[in-house]
Amino acid sequence: MSEVRVRIAPSPSGNLHIGTARTALFNYLFAKKNNGKFILRIEDTDALRTEQEYVDNIFDSLKALGLNWDEGPDVGGDYGPYTQSQRFDIYPKYIQELLDKGFAYECFCTPEELEAEKEEATAQKRAYVYSKKCENLTEEEKEKLRAEGRKPAIRFNVAKAQKAFHDSSILEFDDLVKGKLHVDTNLIGDFVIMKSNGAPTYNYAVVIDDALMKITHVIRGEDHISNTYKQILIFEALGFDVPRFGHLGMILAPDRSKLSKRHGATAVSDFVKEGYLTDALINFVALLGWSPSDGEEIKTVDEIAKDFRINEVSSSNSIFEYDKLKWMNSHYIKMLPMDELKERLKPYLTQYPLDELTDAQFTKMIEITREPLTLLSDITDAVPYFFGKDVTIEPEAWDKALASDECQNVLKDFIEKAQGWDWTEENLHEKLADFRAYWKETTGMKPKVTMWAIRAAITGRTCGADMVGILDILGKETSLYRAQKAIKQTVA
RNA sequence: AGCGGUAUCGUCUAGUGGUCAGGACGGCAGAUUCUCAUUCUGCAAACACGGGUUCAAUUCCCGUUACCGCCGCCA
Image 1 (cartoon, rainbow, N blue to C red):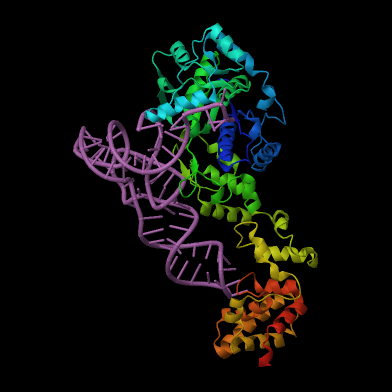
Image 2: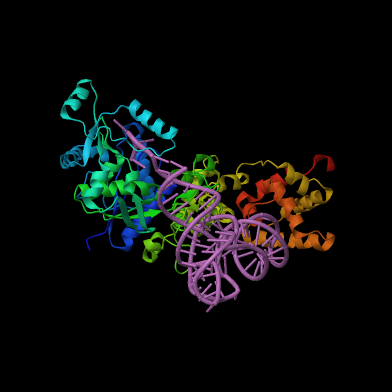
């Protein structure tokens, strides 16, 4: 069998969608597993909706996910160009071939006429298929229409192609993930393959490109199933080899609707901005429809590729559950080496005067605050008390841990004793333990309550990072200054 | 409406003509910890419904229902 060649063909009318990323991943996995080639093609035949910014976003997102392509617009390849808008001189030739073979014809219908046909169909509660009214126009009629200034679109003659290559009107193909699929081609109207402005339509361009790029397997979302029949017919009409098709279930939002902006992030770059790691994203999305044979869910793309079999992919839709993604993200954050974590976190710390800390202090701060991070962006709210002389005490922290006389006494005792402490990490650890023990023995106060008073005074909160580490980073002066400020003046 | 697809805990899924229907996330309970979080232990939680076929059906077949997709000179 010839070399496996698969492709991902996004349309640059938006940033790379997470669903497209999953389709790209499955293509990539299939290529890897079969020692094939993974190709990127930009489908920008609709100039109105295309933006360079989106093209860049698609490149960047795919790269960030580790889905590197073997051939594409930027890296080239033997079957380029890989951007459809640069292939416009290729398409007319095959249109002519289809016209010559009688598998296509010119259609002069206006949008209004087409609209009327559709309305009539709806009124009669029938499915709309094009009336074929232009199928047998004579040359004179065409000339007349042309003289009126009408520019024809080209339609594909479905029935003719079907009849030429199949015994009945039923067209069948064997889907890589769904098994045998079929349709009655009488239900497919003669569709437009070239618009009146000369631009190819999706269903047509895709066939020409897939054929010329020698694509062997087309893996895509199941929303393309009905397009597949049309495409197969074009492949056959032009005498091209028909590739194998595989249709993946869709990704749905938790409310079972299409995943859209109102559910949160949908583009890969949005997720990244929110603090998700691409490793977590790609791992998570692989688990939608595919499951590892050893039950181990945390896996790199390479590991998944070894274990991947397209026919074992689930053919049903799956819901995008943010909870599990978050769990996975926190897992990947925990696995990040310190140096890398520090760099990744910096973009979320721009509002703080990082130069107040030495590198050692900064490292320490990250060490003691990284544990509860679910998103990288969580760091923003986890560290305000490491900066500045003063700290804002949250009302709840005050009420719960500082307002009572008992707490005030703990704090006073802390200030008094801490004056004499040697301010090193080990020593603080020991002294603080003694401090807790002392209060427990003398008053029965729970260790956590004792610590709350100190924590609240110094960080303004009742929960946060390791207290020893905080004191160490802040230093004796700032720590005691803050503790002192939390003493009620009236109680002096 | 028509055509096509799908159906196992709330979610992602494993699995089989005879299983205690397994795992993960989430949930709940407990343990550990100066707090939050981690970590550990335990618990609850599913074969959509109705007919067949069969000694036996979650598994095979048919139907119903639900959900999704498609019906563009969008891709």
